[in-house]
Length: 365
Image 1: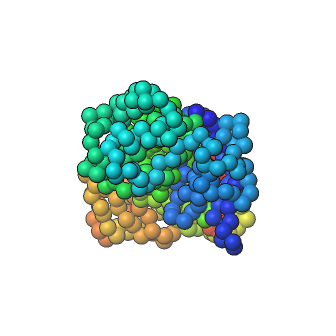
Image 2: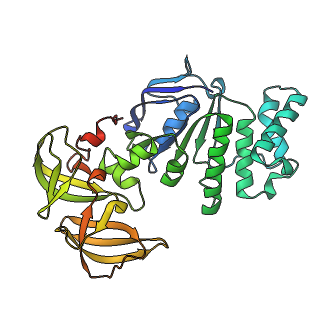
Image 3: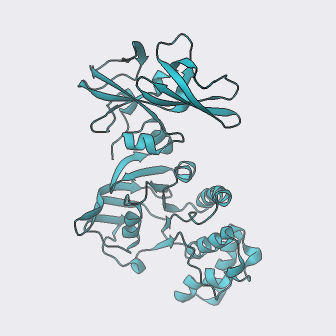
């Protein structure tokens, strides 16, 4: 396995910029996820790492080797696509064995490595079955097996679970992460599904319009979004963004909403009077009859042990995730308490987070 270092990677198609000066490092043995909406540049980045696209500029290092302009065949990588891309006229054993056969590996070695890979993926009982009759989950295991059997330095996966239904995706998320842990593989995984990213990744790069908005662990990205895009893209429901106008001094620890003093992390920089946004996750909102910040309940959504309550406030719409047993009636006017240590502040014009103690050690991409 190997470390991947990307430096100022840029890809333009005429006047259209698909990837804009991206830089990041994937540590040896790390499960790294590129997450973002369709058209954000994540698949183009993956294809440049694979050698299927050449960058306009920038550098790609695989271990100590500069592979920026190497053909895909010269980069010791394995690629797993969204569509399984299996050979329909071959059975499972032949599909997995094909990369080794193409490399001229001996028949005895091929047999041993195919059977070892099949046991690892728990498909050793269907090795002689035709792939046309397999379920979607088993087909994806075969596609993974064809990549694993080569023992490459890096695995690249482009939305490999996208063609599966929800139940199979949840199962395969667990299996993929378990497989990664057993192999100790360096893996770069592309998805638009935040649940896949948050459940599997060691590190995530959130992409938007060809640029990396934020790079960090799943918890850092969820707890400390560095832009309103990340705040709204991550989370279900996403982070609430309440508008207010203020000038804030360095060192300040409170802001005013509806004449209510709200505790916030200590500010590390002063902010000139401007339109700001106060970010709060739904699970960090509480009902409090004595609170000055008020909201009118617009609807409730029962989720079993919890409920999502949609409210209207003078600072904008807000959602709260509360225990199911808390009484919430449409039309009620309720007091709201926001958990101060969990708040974020954003500049509305730029969409960037205002620097506070919360963000002090979080690098911007």
